Image (cartoon, rainbow, N blue to C red; front, side, top):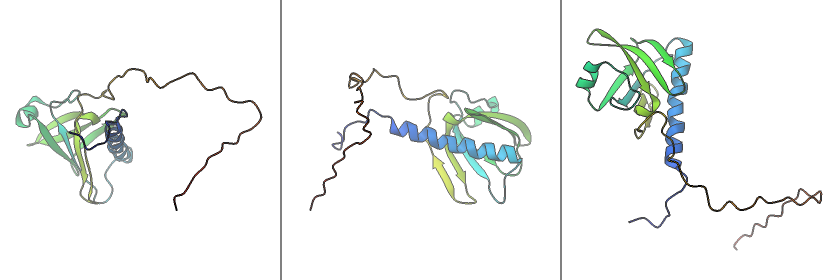
Amino acid sequence: MTDGLPDSLIPYDEIVQEALRAVVGRVLTTIAESGGLPGEHHFYITFKTQAPGVDIPQRLIERFPDEMTIVLQNRYWDLLVDDERFSVGLSFNQVSSKLVIPYSAITGFHDPAVNFELRFQAQDGPDDGPDPHDSAENDGPTAVPVEDGSNVVAVDFKRKK
């Protein structure tokens, strides 16, 4: 049962999720370019270990079969960031590992130094976007502008008294 509102044909939730994941990418890009975390900033990044595009050692998949949280604080190296994913070197039980994590696999990002947190719904893949859809049926013939030299549009805002 719905609450009376029609289902949106515009995937607002997906668009917002994608925009917020871009925030994570931008933050990580800033850190990669500056060579380190400023001040007390540090990040907890939670991601789906089995999501498409995730590349982590098998021993970590066995230990964390669904979801894993990593910490970027003092001991990380080789942080590389692009538009779809990031990779980073971390140590687990004194064993060095390289992790490749697409933004689409991230379910959480937290910077406790400033109490900033984002939560996401996991996507199926890095190229997931809105589902394909049929052409809109409301696209009629293109309106032909009147060539009378006028650029005035009349708008009537009526106020209820």
